[in-house]
Image 1: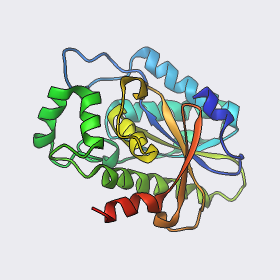
Image 2: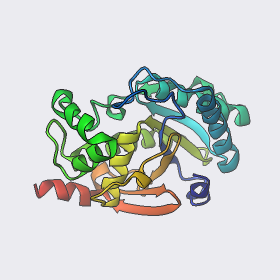
Image 3: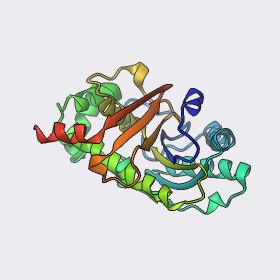
Length: 245
């Protein structure tokens, strides 16, 4: 993430950070991380410090935020905003955090939890996302359709930044979960396989921005930075992939 900061575009270009929540309580037993798992004390400190560091190092103000409705994601967003405000004293603490169903499951990729859940329990998180990316699971959206849904939400959030005409850097936040980030990154990068080493750590994220601020979503180009690599994708290519199905 520190390497990514060095690759961000010029300050006048708004950027969105699509991130996993901060450090949470450990899952007991085998299965999904429950909705009730909260951030640890270290996780709260990390989210605050990361928000503070981002603002200090990039001179970008956090100006809007969306989040999974799960409490650990909302808390991560709130603490990052508080950390940013510690540096800028720019009233970022008054930002409303919009809770989005597309940033949690079921919602982003899962359509029928009763059909999909047994495969998660059987395959584990990495195996489940691999099956999803390869379009091999019942109860799920087509993987490209799901990613386009999330990407369009990010674009709509990003467009809010265009309302700021002071030519200062602005940063949006989107706080979600590891499975959603892992699948999203795999699809936009064109990968058919996800390995354990590819899995997003807690408080790890992908920086995103769009090339044309006024162009329709379908005609835009998305840029992203993930683990020190800057890549870009013509969104029309994803849409064309769906049209072929």
